[in-house]
Structure formats: structure tokens, C-alpha cells
Length: 472
Image (cartoon, rainbow, N blue to C red; front, side):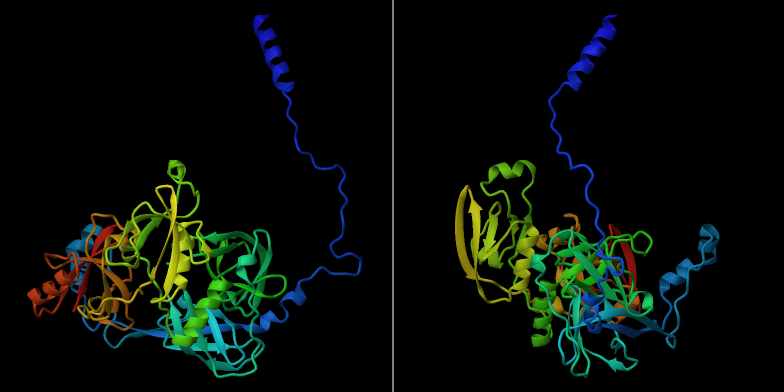
């Protein structure tokens, strides 16, 4: 009986607790969005003009194969190796073999005289870029004006006039829940439009680009949509469709677009100069999280965790532990804010940084240096590779373990020996033959020491593992 009494008493206490729930009104009115029996709800008028600004882009590039068999293939195709592993290693093609690779994408007309913005990955390394205007069978040969791999944007141009240029919207005004439309050429089937909403804003750390501030949308973006337009219900451009997150290659409702303000800024600079020159602060930064917030009066900003010697920040006497809260008139709420804003500034201009140090807000003014590479970084030690010294700042930015030392492959040129050998941007050269490589000087001396040799083994750190590449 005591147990029953206790249960009843406990139930009585729980149900008597004073909880006031917010409740919606009962029996809400339901309305027909079409507002009439002979009216169709449609966004046709919203996209009828902007669809004239979205073009189809087709590219082709020729891949040439090495004229000699890679010595590793001889090892992998050894009968004892094949018997043990039961595996046939694919042979590379001979010198006379070439393969033409074609791809499709989309672009957006940004000027009446033929400038078109698209993704860099749509036109990268292309031998030919062809453009089809909407509603036309005429094909135009396009010229690459400039590209920016760090934001995955590129500008091309065709010789045409009186084109329908897109109208740019201010992407800073966007809100989650806004209705948007994705326009492009998915799977090469021709013009298509899909609808959705803005799922999230200011998405970063996706791992797609170096400078990320993505618009996330559930409007279907599929292969071929890359470089196409993301527009609002006015038909104004809010972003350039860039990528999707997918397990199997199809659309899973998570697509990303580059904001129109970034597109406008990068496109203008590419048209004016053909390249992007960025200022660089020279700091490693992180966000305030958990208990670290207790050490600062400001609860938002970019926390400096390391300062590169000889950098702009070093010249300005910024230190580890400083919390950057403002640059010029731009309020800095996160590390992404700081990285993206500095990335819009050109070198050799004066900037003002407001920061908190030891509970005191301070300000410093200095000249922002550029991210021009040292002459040593443009060395031609290995044909087709642009190389960089791997410092602490780069390690932090690229999330490379601290115990990995070597030379970073910044760029691999198309149709080069390095490309044929299998080098990729992001590789870290850690050794040549039996010689350890920690910097560019080590790499250069290693090749001098080896001298003339038909095939040279190069050890590369990639994706957490060390792999072997062989170059002639």
C-alpha cells in the first residue's frame, strides 16, 4: 500500500506543476494561395527574364599519356605479385595515345558585351570553352579572362552584344527561409529551374574552397548546374551554384552557392586585372568557444593563436591572444569574417584593426602586405609544379599534422611531366630517393645530388599517408 500511495502522490505532484505552454489558436483559417478558382500560383514572371542570362558551357581538354612505362607498373605486373594479390594493375597508354575529356556546366551573363561568370572548376585546364546562349543554336567560342581557384570563380568572354545581363541582389540582405530558384543545365538536358529555400547562411569549413561563405539551399543542384544562377523571387542573382553534398552524386537537398556580393567583387577584379591580388595578414586564427569566452569582454571575434614572422600582423605588433573585433568598418564576429574580409582587400593599402588585449580595446593602423609568392616558390625544380615552403601558418590552415615537414605543391600545370606523374595540388613532398626533404633548399639539393637519372622516386604525403610518385 505504501508503494501505491507514493506513486499516486508523485503523479499528483508532477501533474500539478505549473507549466504554461504557448498554444496556437484553434481552427485556423485556410486560404487558397491562388486566390480564385481560375488562378494558378506561379513564379513564371520571376524567372522569365533571368533565364535569358543563364548559358550552357561545354569544355574539352586533351590528356596526353607518358611515352614510357612507369617502373612501378613493371613491379605491380610482375607474375609473383599478381599471383599473390590476384590483381591486374592497369597499364598506362603509350605516347601516341591521347584522350579528349568533355564536360558541361553553366554560366551567368554579367554584361551586355559578353562577360560571363562561372565556376573555376567548370573551365579549369580547358583547351576549348564553348558557350550556348539560351534559346539559340549558335555556339560561341569563349576566352578565359581570369580565374580564382580560392573562391572557385572564373570569368570568360564571348564576342556578342546586347545580351541580357543579370541583375545582382545584395546577398547581405538574405535570410533563412527566403524562396530561391536554381537555374542551369543539369546533366546536359538543357535549361532547367528548381525551387527551394535558403537553408542556412555564412557556411564555412565545408572544405571546398579556401574562401568560403556559402549560401546553403535545398533547391536541387545537380551536375551541370555548376556556375548557374541562384535567384530570389524577383529574379535577381543572389549566388552562383557551386557544389552539393551527396553520398551518391545525386541531389540530397544540400547545395551551396557563392554569394552574389563575393561574385561581384571577384568578377570585377578579374575583368580589370585578369587575376586576384589579395592582402594577407599572416595570422592563425580560431573562434572563442566554451571557457575561452570568459577571458574576454567581447564574446565574438577572431582569436589570434599565432603570428607569422615578417608578416603584416607582425609589423603591426599584433600578438597571440589578441581578439580581432573590427577591421576598418567591418565588424568581425568570427574567424571566417576576418579571413574573407582580408581576402577582399588588395595589398599595399592602409587598414585599421580594432582588437581586445588583456581586457582593453585597442586599435592599430598599418600597411597590408600581399600574398605574392617568393621567387623561390616559383622555382622550376620539378617541371610543372609551383611549390611553397610549408610553414606553421600553412600547416594550421590546411590542417596538416605538426610532425609533417616538406614542400607543398601549390599548383600542378596541365600537360606537364608532374601532371603525368600524378602530382596533385595539396601534396607535400617529403623525400626524393633516400633523401629527406624539409624545405625548398633540401629539394633543390636533392635533385643536384642525384644528378641525371632516367627515373626519380619522389615521396609524397597525401591524405594521411606517404605515397610514391616516379618522374622522368
